[in-house]
Image 1 (cartoon, rainbow, N blue to C red):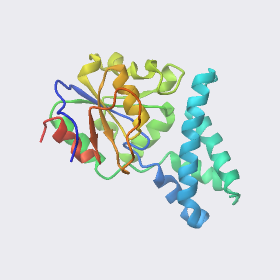
Image 2: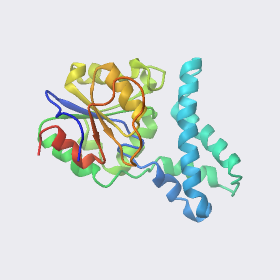
Image 3: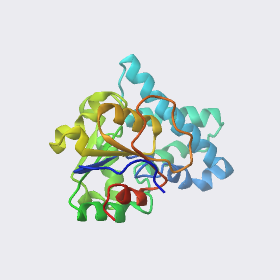
Image 4: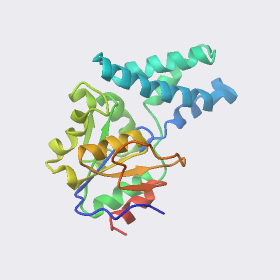
Length: 230
């Protein structure tokens, strides 16, 4: 069950993409024949290094888009695990464009839209990456916007990224519920002024940093209940 007081006055739900709406583990899963029993290890290391590179680039002021960062992180993970099957990197990068949505996502978005909420994605992904993922998952008609950090040229958790949502949705910060599976992202969005739901799918310990999210849920099916929409 969700923990945290109920959300109020929310007019829009804005979702992180990778790990929240889209299952990053599904990418390595799609190359199981090439990865064998090292798929999980590759997926975990790839994702960890991908995020590290966004933070390092943001702090250093050396921006490159998320496609480049994703490829660089994959190179690191493949080298570390000594995986060099021909065509493996190309296959994994292609799979990133057809990443699977979590099974509850389409019904959740339909339910939130039924209740009149605006819906959007706010992501580190490039516009091309996000368009491909949204299209593959059949979500295009369910969203009012897909906002990429490329508009501001810096990755999360920079405040300019979170500022894209109220700007494009024409709402106040507190009227937006931001949803992320990444605890650092959730805390940073809360610091920006959103109401925040942390989707803690894997039972992680909460981050020990100020301004925790308003609610912790274990999957997205619990979000409408917290919003009082059941």
